[in-house]
Length: 101
Image 1 (tube, rainbow, N blue to C red):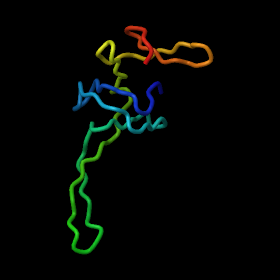
Image 2: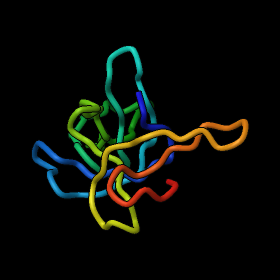
Image 3: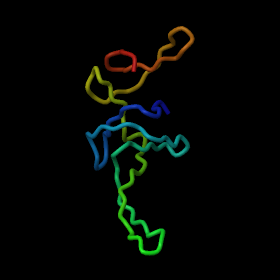
Image 4: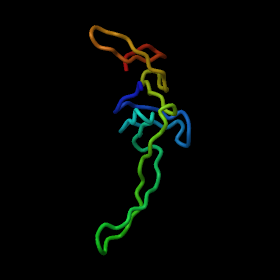
């Protein structure tokens, strides 16, 4: 998986198509990612204590990794990710403009 935590991504398919967000969590075995503020679902929560009211929470659910692309700020769109070896480190680059991500 070429995406990492805290990467800015854009959704390319689904109900949130075209929206941008930051990756909060990655599930590499399942091939899914949770993007902050996207793919929200409502969950009803029961009261924990006597006299407390129950509530409805909006939680972000995982998206399939194939439905998101890394967002390149210089290109201004979703791009494929490439790799280049610079010294002793492997650097991720944008396939569109060739700049470091």
